[in-house]
Amino acid sequence: MKTFKAYRTTEENGEYISKIEELSFDLLSNDVIIKTAYSGINYKDLLSISGNKGVTKKYPHTAGIDACGIIVSDKTGTFTSGDEVVVMGYDLGMNTDGGFAEYISVPVDWVIHKPSRFTLQETMEIGTSGFTAALGISKMLQMGAIPSDGPVIVSGATGGVGVYAVQILSKIGFEVWAVTGKKETEELLYKLGAKSILSREEICVPKEKPLVRPRWAGGIDTVGGDTLVNLLKQCKKSGSIATCGNVGGMDINMTVLPFILNGINLLGINAADTPMNNRMKVWELLEKYAEPSLVSKTGKEISLDQISDAIESMRKSSHTGRFLIKL
Image (cartoon, one colour):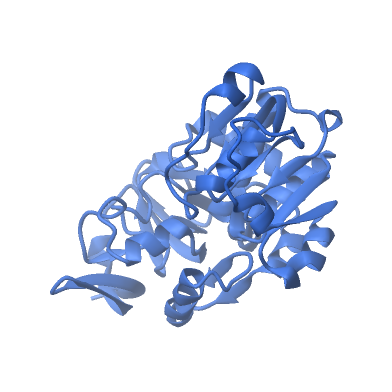
């Protein structure tokens, strides 16, 4: 019986145990079978591995919400054996076994051809994090954001989403203010294109007034909670803040005044459920502005047997950039 390796999470007496297992090819029953080349570790993977039933309902399960690789077979005939492809979002790694495995099997509608400008490795260096950043920026641009409006801010700037948000916004021409609590990463953020560095404490401490003097024309928030509130309160008129994170809290405690007096826009980012036509437009933006070779220096390439250590690093917020899993 043919088998493959996967980093598998099992529920045992209320505890969730993750380890490398040998799985049968019989599990690969969807339209398309892909030999995985790379995957990445995202926050949602951490939740899945931890047993969060809001992400993954049934175990045993293989996490990994993004992956790239080479087509082995396609029942629908849409793709040809040997095609280089990317799968990102939808239900991958949530309730469908994901990219922390040597092979994945998914519905054909989830698969796209690898964007021509990037290698397979680069697509996963971008991964869900870079895609999320680009989706938020795309929404800001749709709302009319232009560099001449003034500086834009990126919270959690050294995280997977943040580093790409800084890099892409800078490449487009925006003056980027990056927020971080890691003093040692300031040089890196400047290399990515940041023009100014703000301390995490300056941005995350709640401001009591319902409106505060405007400082930025928009931004990308990866934190949530009081940080998001402060970004909204200090946004210039008609500006847009796109948000995708909740590590700082899921609640926002504020009045409606910034919205009805300053006309600001709060833009939600949901990368997983992005329709395919919008998904391809985001990849076009990435092909135009993203520089994986620059951002990849912020991350680390690991193997399947190093995932547990990487997950622990993410829990402690002691990492910078993205963990890239080479299969």
